[in-house]
Length: 287
Ligand SMILES: Nc1ncnc2c1ncn2[C@@H]1O[C@H](COP(=O)(O)OP(=O)(O)O)[C@@H](O)[C@H]1O
Ligand SMILES: [Mg+2]
Image (cartoon, rainbow, N blue to C red):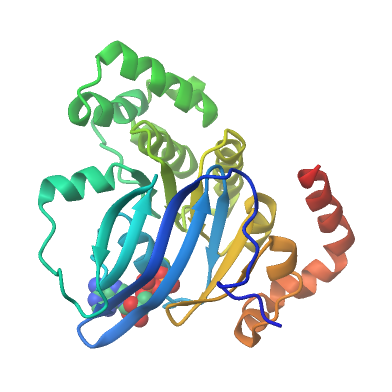
């Protein structure tokens, strides 16, 4: 039997659901992009979203922080219903900007392109949101920013400008900048896909540190080895629906859905050799 969204086990990292999406649908004109996504993420859980190009991964992340407004469905973060629109399209009044900003501040988003402010140091980039948007005292924002940059392995680079940093270092500053706003959940959209291959590992390592620190994370990535390493649960999207989900050792090594089988095919072949090692690693993680 296939592991579907209705019967898949949810790892018991925390008991509290931090993010809950119910029946999220999204249309662009007549084109249906998301077709009723249900997804619940518990505190401290790391969920990796995979799927072919065009399956709706980016659209889903953009719905969570209202960069896309779902056609219908609901979004609950930390037990607060932030968005609800019925399937018949009623209650479709636009959401006031202030409310959108409040909803957006519950999530931190990291994009492919890091877009740091070029005229500010790494430290200033990370302090900017807390000081300007949240009106935090500067010294407090500075201390938090230093801790986050340290967690990202950038303690030596806090006074550098983006042009003095590699792509991998800039992306790690971007992660610290999103974290500085104290989001309930961090969303990553292919955070390593714009990087030179030799810089991918350092960003992944920083994200593993973030996961270990207990952050709740939803990550879109094509790096299946990384997904295996970091995910508590892997969710496979196909044509705007959750087609299969479960622990990485199940979804990546023993996929059931035919399109998931072909999607992970190459990984699967190489993982055959690695399977005893990978499963031992997974068992270690569980202990
Ligand atoms: N702003 C938009 N207007 C119209 N169609 C869009 C828009 N954004 C995304 N799409 C379409 O929605 C589908 C899903 O896209 P996307 O969420 O970017 O997929 P993925 O991130 O999985 O590659 C694609 O067919 C894409 O062309
Ligand atoms: Mg995408």
